[in-house]
Length: 405
Ligand SMILES: *Cc1c(COP(=O)(O)O)cnc(C)c1O
Image 1: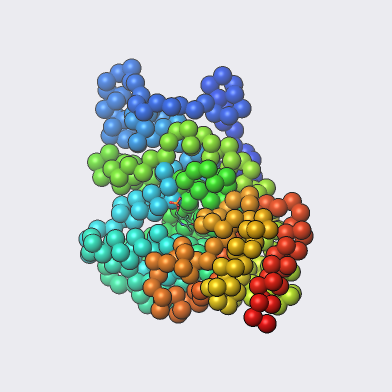
Image 2: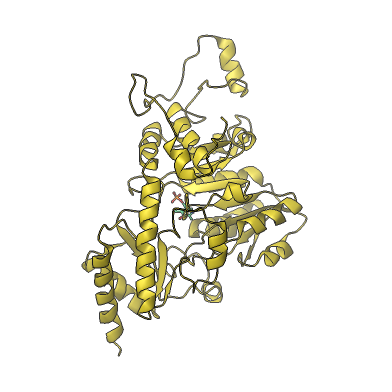
């Protein structure tokens, strides 16, 4: 599967062309758990991974998953991809595949709460330990590398602080130490192409922007053909043996939604950028990578793909948890969006990550990294009339801030 020539990931999605069995404009869905062989010998070869294009059993691979995997590998400009039943299924499979007892990870300290909990609480049971570092300082990453370090792990745009990791700089460090750079690109599909910047393995939670409908959970690993084959090896592949498979019907659904991702991403970014700019003008403590006030604004600009903006995520600091709670409840009352975890939905979603999605991170570490109780993370929706949304947000903000005034 050669990657296509265009370096624009939207073009690479646009250029996908799959036909259904009867000439359908969507590929046929194959809802079979197992597959027949005309010859017993072909079955044996398939078991050993020697046969191209044959299906054995759906925990290993299935045609609907394959279509989606091809599409995602084109988007990320990697040789291959694998889809999983959740983002955590992708993350845990990659980590457990690459690591053995005694190994060590250098990870960004601001990663998704589930990822953090897995590294901090679960992997030590297997004698695998993690050093969590400030990912915006590549020298700290290099200092943390030990002889037993097996990988560097980061998100491009971190959850929930929206810190930007310089993937190109981290890739140089990883290469120098002959270890892979594993990058979670869930917050910024299309906005960044980590593989083009030197990442070895790119992970997604499809649950968020990529599917965009909040009706399923799913994940993906985009990497070299060799690594994907290894993950699926029937004898020792983590993705085969742990069984994080995505269902065929779901894979077919996600593929259809992927086709609108370029248009959606652009709109999420436009809306978020507009709100951030307008809120900042009024003195609201808003953080958005598209604003010059964001500490890594220049890094973002240097590494981003053109056309998709600075992403759909912003944070607002209300000062105290009480105010954050009131702010969110009033936003929901005014139907600006929903008080809910997750992101990348057509409606705006907000939560207070200090006591929510990042509650796995101990309080003293939260303070150190600037994760305050008053922080509200917002995933900005696809509102057609974003000025009306701004007015509602400003009204709610004024109400909340006048309470103690
Ligand atoms: C949601 C999320 C995950 C986990 O994905 P699930 O699909 O919920 O398992 C991993 N990384 C990031 C950045 C996320 O936002």
